Image (cartoon, helix red, strand yellow):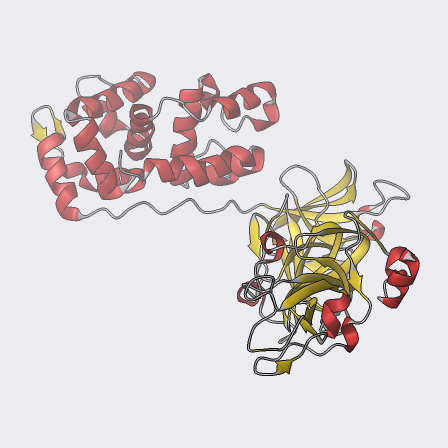
Length: 469
């Protein structure tokens, strides 16, 4: 008898595809042949109507009274209607009443609503709760139901469904993403973080059609390298790059490459026989540090006249050096920090000279002899020493520890004396592009040998230096 009821309701094929997590509801056999309730029509005792996916029977004559269990009691509830009383979305089959759940054993497209107002989800699987919390409320105050059909599209090959249209999804790692339906998609590559899958992000690849979001994780490569190609792909490099080819920790490398390169065994050799390989790149051009806040001449002159003196005389003769120092250290924001945090700036300047003069054998009496004897060290020395005043190694400890353990990360021997020197030298080398002990610029050397620390300086420490404290 149960099978007959399921067969009449058109649900027998559903048993092959899905299993319900709730007991099957009572399903009326004849909803599809019953007219929908019409306000203004006259109904007499025994007549049936469909209203809000439910079958109702009039107990006596009535007009203009909406079917419900309240009111005069003229309406008698008979059963919930299978298939929304014949008004399911085109191509969809009823599977659950409002607030029921269904478990799908394969990817399905589902809908939730009533009377022509529905919310859709595509390519879903597992247990779906058909309620307002899952779908939103497409038709408030009306009893709704859930429907399904075989998924029109499971997304582009190799991609996994992650969001409905207008939904958001937080990517794990670097991914390629797609948005669309029915074989038509817009793509974005190399994305991280939280993505909103909508036309504002992707454009509209298929106007008027409900779309979904999909992602594909990029394979991991060597440290600090980024995936750019599948095996046998040819890619045009941006600038000068180091490139790698392989998989699973086995890579062959080429350095200093420009132009187009084909990632295959002919170019690199085969680093891991019999395994699908990928291409990766790492730019050898370090990212630019943030630009410092503006330095105004009025504030600079006032600071020189009131706070920086040598042996009782003015330091205005060194204005260009002090201008460079203040600019690279943070401009007007830096001068404001000096006034707030170090009101006796003359002593701080003196300390800066003294520390450097001892290394160069200069006089420590205001360090004037050092200042005059080593003009090329004026700006970097002041920058270096004032970093110590603002930060004595906080934030650099872990990077310094890593460099102590790995000599390949040691971009400068003096910086290895302590985390305080590590951070002061790092800031000095990055903002002063000519600072280095080799033919490379300071930026290039740090970025090549310890890119993680370079990015910490550029993205975290230098912005902190350029903030008001």
